[in-house]
Length: 452
Image (tube, rainbow, N blue to C red):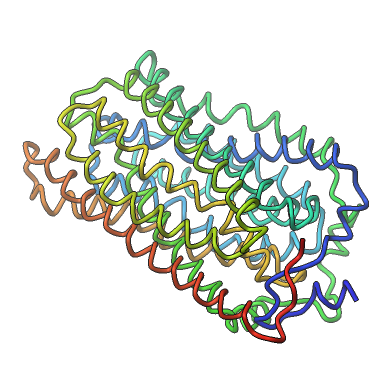
């Protein structure tokens, strides 16, 4: 009976029983795995985001435009990061997820080191492509592993903890990257960011067990009768508009957060004249505190409020994003750097608050056979359009407003970021639509009762 409920694919499947996999492992083992995945996610965002704090010195050193900065920080990373996520998620649904994550860490860490050795825009662009290739395998496999390690009533909290690693990684990227750039060079920042991942790759491989046990790679590639294909997963998810509204919201959240983060350096160096060391640690503290609290608090909201009304946390996500828009605009036009950094707490909090409730909702909407695939499809679309296009959008607008005049670069970037802030309101609209759809489905007579 539990198997039948868990594998329902209709739109009414908005709740599920406790995973049988959870009973095969101890709580201590699950918590240890979560701790390692926290470090993995932290390094993921350290290596991904260190380029944001060093973008301005790279621009001056290699003679780049803001559009090229956007291409380098966003699109170069996003193209393969997003497109490879789907086949690697399909592999994660069949093979050992700990192995996939370990290999992914080793690849992206090595490519981060190579970023520090690049001599021109093309070399740096290709190295960033390699970072995206490595990181493509980590997200879906990690989410799928968490879903098997933790029961539904603890899953949003676990995902929120893993999400809290994002601002911690960003803190290390900004504070460490800014300090190292100021003391040495932007090349040294890349080198020191990439090396720790090679160690964690070994730790992940040998100490974190996958609950599904040992599965040979050859067997993983063998066809399995009744296995969910990408086409079938899309067909299943197409019957659930809430999923696609979550994807749309994710696109817009990443569009804003990565578009802003890619030009942190440009904003504070051009407008406020800050040096990289000061900017790095102040941004690091801001992102670490407000972003970390946002992810943790979002997960708690998902667990606590979700017990009474599983869809209410999604409406809260929308409200938080709408409030973040004026806060971000105020930060962009703040009269001094310290006030600007404080006000950036609004969009930073919103950019991580959504993490736990959103991914818990995705796991709730997906069947057991499409868990990793649903996350991969989300990452593919949200990453390609949000992470890939967001920085290019800001860079292109900035270059357009500046018109090639170096004296206008500061005000042009402010104008571009102000327009970017308005996309938070659009994201809030999609969370409202998710809330409406899921409330309607839960009110239907044949809907399954919520899990308590």
